[in-house]
Length: 442
Ligand SMILES: Cc1cc2nc3c(=O)[nH]c(=O)nc-3n(C[C@H](O)[C@H](O)[C@H](O)COP(=O)(O)OP(=O)(O)OC[C@H]3O[C@@H](n4cnc5c(N)ncnc54)[C@H](O)[C@@H]3O)c2cc1C
Image (tube, rainbow, N blue to C red; front, side, top):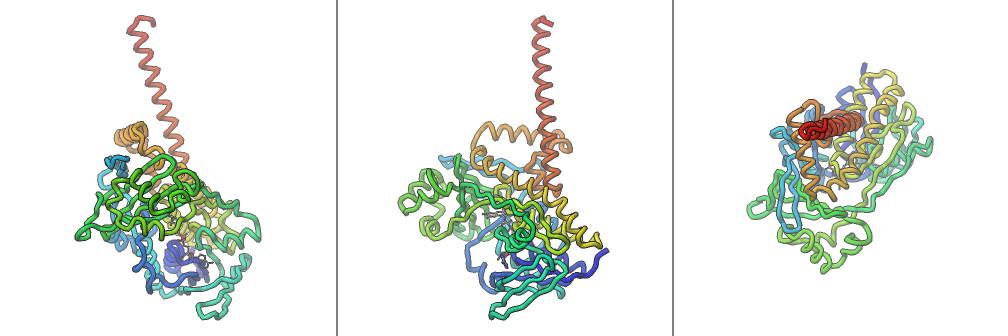
């Protein structure tokens, strides 16, 4: 029941161009307004490699716009976590009992360029770069903006989409009309990206098919492989106080801190001090938005609706799932207001669920992955999954390797926990009864 609409998307990052492809394929006229310059012209190629974990939800969306195969040709699959202890010993823990199941390390810049290429290849998509938005009217869907030459324009639309990231101007305009934004909750940690360059001949200097973690209690470093043989490492440390970015701020302190905590990585990072001092510290927060649409004219997707902390590697994947869901509801409902309400009905609880999982995974990666008890519990979870594959699937696997909506994953894992608890109690009761019977007391 698709009908042709004029649609403005603010934001040409990851979600904006993907949604543009889906909507254009349904016959809509799409105009993307992006604040930055065109990354295909210069930008990413010369910059640092920054990568993201791409999993089932993201791949499903890329498949719908014909990009899955092209993107997969550029990724490095990661089959599990490689934990590094302070002595430099490594321990590998696979993500799945299913052979070949992996998450994929993809270049953010490369993916952004592929998505923009795909959007621009559709005759009914137009992209304007280097725009300054000066007014957003969420009642009418019209946007006032100036182009790179300072020329002003007004774009009228049947639907306005906010794909403008965590600090969304569209969300702010919606909130000014009707309060929807419950604020951004920052965690007390921030992040900084560093690089392990490729070794001689472009070889990876660490095993490449893993997400590397240096868990150290209240702080950690992770490393994801890039196709060019390098690794992008991200330090997640407290912003202030003990073991923080504020404390580790001089060349001597940087070298000492890394030698103490990440000794095996130091010889692999020849530019450690220069990188550390040059690269910015980024904040980490969760955007809590109570409603993702304003009436029948304006809607939010991706980080604009639900920016999350990056510890489940799901922000982009969730954003891509929003795109699929929004395109499907617009295709299925003739009434645009009903379509946006239906989109909100599923995606808002999903956004809240993945925000919660991501915060929980921060503690898991940072504090628990180094612990033997945690690793034993993980092994038991995997054994249950192997023995009862339809009945018990660990949460990580439901999130990363299926497209089951996050809110359903939450309900299912809660049920699974109760079953495991019930079975464990029944087993213990059985053992006690047997001992009593052997002792002749019953
Ligand atoms: C350290 C870190 C690691 C991460 N790792 C992962 C991972 O492994 N896996 C994963 O799935 N996700 C990860 N994420 C999350 C992921 O980056 C985001 O969820 C994803 O980029 C969201 O896409 P988006 O299109 O909604 O927003 P963005 O990618 O932020 O794009 C928003 C776009 O809007 C533009 N814009 C903003 N304001 C305006 C304006 N006023 N006018 C015009 N344009 C505007 C911006 O320039 C930008 O291009 C990570 C995030 C961080 C910070």
